[in-house]
Image (tube, rainbow, N blue to C red; front, top):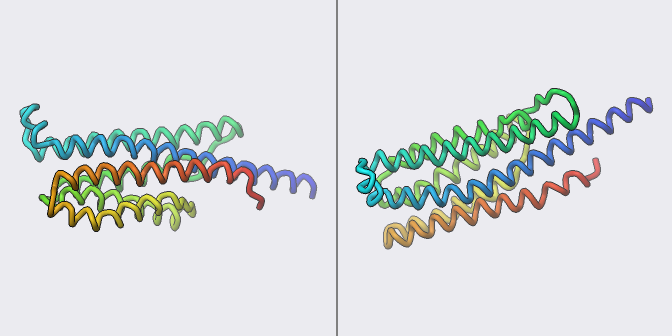
Length: 214
């Protein structure tokens, strides 16, 4: 009985550490998205002038920028979660098979982002400014629901980011009709704030997992 209790305690420690690594990975991922997405938006909104500079069609250039940013984001996301998996595997000297440890999180959110951002890139003005906000907000919330109900992992930082984006899209839509340039600037700011807020929240909550009692 005592040995069984020790095994159970060891499994609890492993599970806590797995959850800790997952939250840290989400924190890194959201912060990185909070940096690369605004950069991508600046390039996307500058597509009329940049497409002329590179002698490309505006729509093709916009789609290319969207693809590159999402591709880079997917790569970094997968790297973060697969790195967490390798750390856990090394610590325990065993195979890791749970969804959060195998990089499934990154795959799920990556492909959802790719699809929704691809749709957002074909929406005409003046809604194209706000379409990126809609795409990101919906992608984040859909990812949260998939992870919660299929993999039984709850990450409230995703809901935090998604709600900020979707709520901010309402005034941004009004601003876009009045002043497109101001709406573009506000979109970049909203993206950065929402993702950085979610990332720092994840980093703050991660250490609490190790100290929680079962």
